[in-house]
Length: 332
Image (cartoon, rainbow, N blue to C red; front, side, top):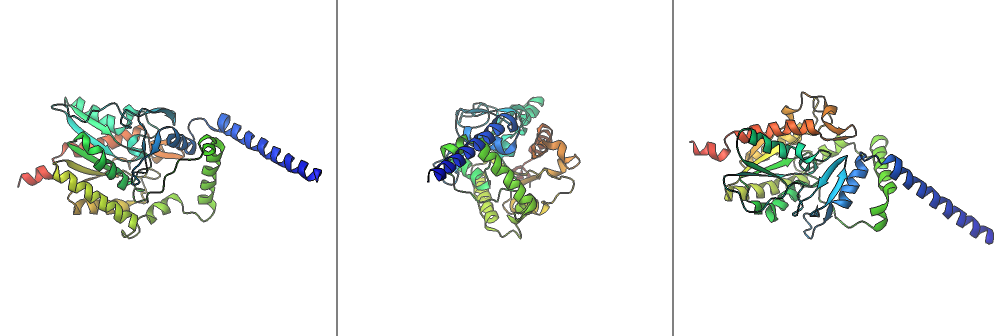
């Protein structure tokens, strides 16, 4: 009996030592500040908080600061990754509000190199005053983005709203719960889960990233996409009723911009924009002459880097310079 107890205690001690060893390795050697899975976990832990609104699920907490993917990430008093903005408008100042996910928030890119801040500088170079407010939140889909606008973003009274659409925006909203203390502290747990998911997708039954995205839409009748369309209509109706110019920008998936696999998704979004009489811009033609990897934050992480953000800004600036649908309609 004593022998069994001793063996059990020895096994527990070995497991504990192994676990601590793995945790130490991940914290002090594997975590170089550029591991996508770990950085996204830190983002959720250090920047986000649960929202009382189940449709939003999570929001940026106000006045938070962290270093993520090697760049500073700070939120203002209203939880935006941006400088402070009052709800009240400044006289003679064009105000643009950006809705979107981690691409809009500028994952892995310094704030001043994001396409939101680049747009401000483009207007300034013309001698025009413009505020471009970054309301992006990582892991949001179209429903959450529109919900944010209808409950909070509208308070900024923008002249223009740009809804940045990405191929995963038809994903369902998953339940959000506060992680347990061990999961909030365990680097190794999150590192291992991320590596296992990659292996499953590569060698076993899980869909790869492209198959997964395409399955969110299929023939255009999948519930997630239909729900996203309904929220695009809600946003379009609000903007029309309040004289706000709405633009939908299709931001490309950057794994392979020269042999693009998601044109069907772009077409579905374009069809919805046409149906709801909303302006649309496809950003892919502005980036598809580039080497895909030149546009990535890191080789495993195809979020838009500074080069890609610059190209996106030029695409958006070009459409912003054109007359809006409402202005064109007034000409006839």
